[in-house]
Image (cartoon, rainbow, N blue to C red; front, side, top):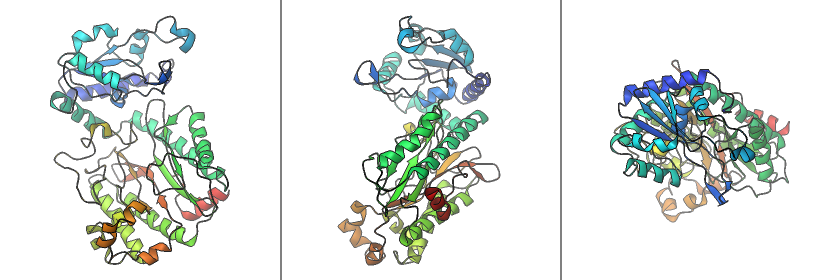
Length: 456
């Protein structure tokens, strides 16, 4: 957000959030924004991204700033920019002006933080310099234990569901993301590089003065789940998987994946697998409502995929039995989605504290160990639904895997689908009091509609 032009409603939103935190946590809290990191020499830095926990209560991406929260009151600690910085960075608002815009009750220079830090709870910041500063000021290791764990649990409960201000930002991120995907589809043609399509998509995000919420995945090697290489040439028979999401200036994210044929037309085998993934996607979204267990949604995706692969002759057996033995995970090894908010994998810096209901731990099962969310859904949650099908050589060609699943996989039939390396379909779904709302529904998922967009 432009700190020179901050909406007046922001201050009230932030006051409401810290009042809610005060009801859950009676310990003083200090949250650090973090600082930028140098790439190769001090003045050449990576783009700064403020800590999401700081952003949630401070509202602005301030660098080298700290907020102290106690009983619903907020003090901002930051130094005014030196006069010399105006030459390189332009004029910056004074500390008191920024404090007014975010509804802080006081504003003090960083030098005064030391005496007010001891005994406070905090959450670790990712950059090493700030993490060290946290430990020095608090005179202890910063970890998810004691008062820090209590604070993290309180913040997770607040950020788990989204207020009106957050939803406004999330809808904006979703709208720009959809525009980016349409641009990517329209720009796709054989002979280009993956990088060309990536550029067409990220151009839209940049043109809206946003950044990417994560490193874009635009690849013909869709079986590599987080593929961040873009050097392959697009060939007529390829599928292109694009997992690209925008992040607003205030840090709120979207996360969308579509898969399309470079030629503009799926082959018969590509369409068959695409429709299996789409059936799982649609079935999961139809089930979303408050009180439903997210793990049950994941298992539904697994069962629909297993059933589809049985119908195609790739798997053999009853779908429920195949899921119980994790046979589906040969082709769908990851979880069906995750929380979405200020972070694209929201609050994943807290480990499984936010993603898993209290008392639950990750399964060691092949088909469940990558599940990022395992708790009942609540109205106001935003989750992704992203089933997929992948042919990962390291999994399918593993001798132990071949032996374990030799009676349930028709390997000869699977070989007929060798033009399908990876397909994923992902949307952002808001849990409402009555059911759900797909924030990204305006971007089609139907195979015919996808073909039309690419050809058009």
